[in-house]
Image 1 (cartoon, helix red, strand yellow):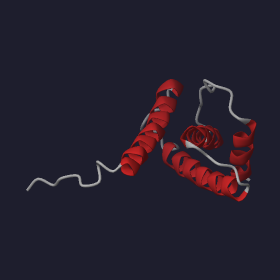
Image 2 (cartoon, one colour; image 1 turned 90 degrees about the vertical axis):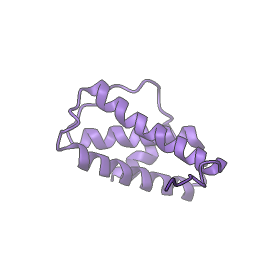
Image 3 (cartoon, one colour; image 1 turned 180 degrees about the horizontal axis):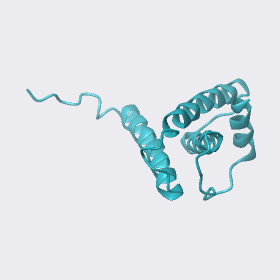
Length: 112
């Protein structure tokens, strides 16, 4: 029996899927550009820390009244990813852009 995707036409679902796809692309790009093996045992804890930092930073942004649009949230995700990977001894490539200092501060707050 063929299951039809009943939610795929919903603009909110499409936006969410695109957002998570961009997060996965950031992860893949970091691994590819840094030469990290996909089988490196440090990847799992680094990824878990990344999500924890991101969750904490997003919560802090909300408490401070800072609105995170998709682009700011993805930049924050990338900052959290770099912090987490560095903490676990994984190499990171220099960022392609200069990050917003407010976002860097949020991510570092979550790392404490």
